[in-house]
Image 1 (cartoon, rainbow, N blue to C red):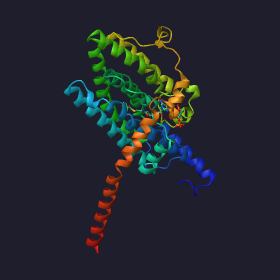
Image 2: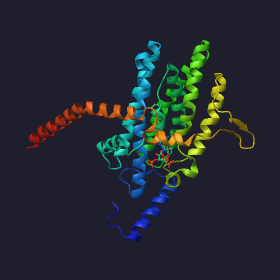
Image 3: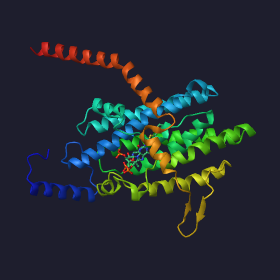
Image 4: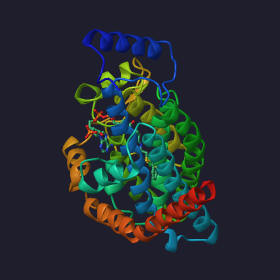
Length: 322
Ligand code: BYC
């Protein structure tokens, strides 16, 4: 798109593009955009899509063992929703001129990331509660902010996804509330799940702002509307109150209300663990990717059948025209 532009023309286009962003205009697929804007969006949106799809696995693990038919029906619907979110996001990323095959290939080769939280195992039913409450809760903080992202298809996708995520968050919190108000063993199970999922949930917001590679440019282009640390703080503040209501304890001895800041102070994340989990060294990293590759391979016949059907339809149409 920028091939035939002189340096001066390119500079002019970039200035006009930034003016549109500053004026809160949405950028649409056929609009001119800097190549780096396009690439950065493909990176973030595809990683977001991969997270939704890989994120089906930890919860999918409990569908056959949900404690009641009612909980099973809810969990089935939730996991299916996550798959749907992945599909909206892949489609939105495709509007940037990249194919679904290329996006999936990047996930399978390990060159594209997905949220590190999904590399942790789900050891008990309470983990399903913790994921809904904390993981979907953290995702909502982030995605509510992304509803105002500058790229139209991403922004519209987020509006729809947020509606579904808020139901996911409530069902998870309800599981935790039920367990916390149950027997001593059930309460212990809920506390144990909270202990294991709290810190990985805080990692979902990414590195500190000062260490974030993409934030400065993404904020300037309004791809991101709030910084990693700002959103993490919002999540901590809301979670403290929610934990109090169900009488569970957030596993952080440094958690303390700071009157001056008007926010809770909290302890430092184990960034080594974050990096390990993000780069394939999490407890379930290999399993998650291997399962996704297997599912993709198992679905090859469906893709083949769809291609054959499309080509037959085209042939029939061509014959009708001739
Ligand atoms: N995990 O410069 P930074 C869900 C990477 S799923 C792994 O701050 P950015 C759900 C980052 O990609 C919803 N990697 O990056 C589904 C970058 O690496 P690359 C998930 C992470 O993009 C099922 C590097 O670290 N939500 O709701 O400015 C069941 C430097 O970071 C992580 C989204 O995906 C991480 N946690 O900011 C239940 C939200 N954090 O690309 C629930 C969309 C950072 O240079 N994404 N990295 O190789 C975003 O908002 C932003 O991409 C992030 C990171 C805030 C995550």
